[in-house]
Length: 263
Image (tube, rainbow, N blue to C red; front, side):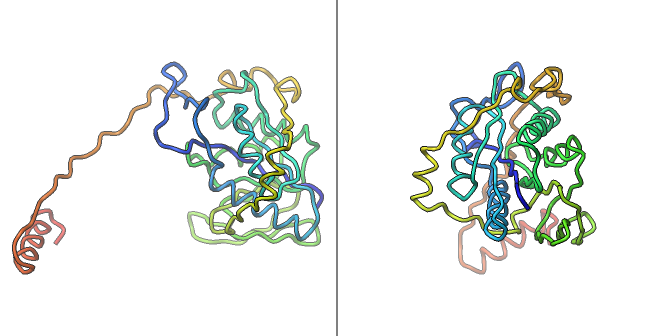
């Protein structure tokens, strides 16, 4: 094991986000962000493997300049280097265009023995970018992994969740793996590493650096069309104030549940 690339995404730290009325995409500029929680599990797993094998761990992200915050957090957690793929042309990408750009970034790095993703990002909840990236790179993949073990013969064994339940698979390296929150508990970065990470320069590549096909990046390369975005109406469940003794209140509650068909 020589190199691990762990892909991270910065997601809004709040649900109160704005939607671009034209593109229907989240407006991410000037929005406080945090590292996607499942990506922290991916970083933690990469760093644990590094501690056992001495390999190099590179954190990779695609997004606006403020995504450097999450990359520095990844460095503070133990990653060796970090790279941001960023330019106006890359903005507004769906999962297909994002995965294409990440695959070009991984190729620019020179490939990796293992590429780790979180199971999905909590802002979009698709779980598609990891698997699509594997397809672009022509690599085998294991998704929803809850336990990961590297073998000496260039294979890995992974316990994973599937619609049928839990299963164990073997995958030949190099490979792409998406991990769940059950795989580990992410560490807290110690202050000295946080301070060092804050001073680190983050390497930034644009689409020209990566040799991207301009028809396959950003909005132009996206095949997902969002026609409208709206906030679901909140149902008026109503509130019933129940007074009286405990027995009277219990009888009233039982009556309400019976009328609702619960009892």
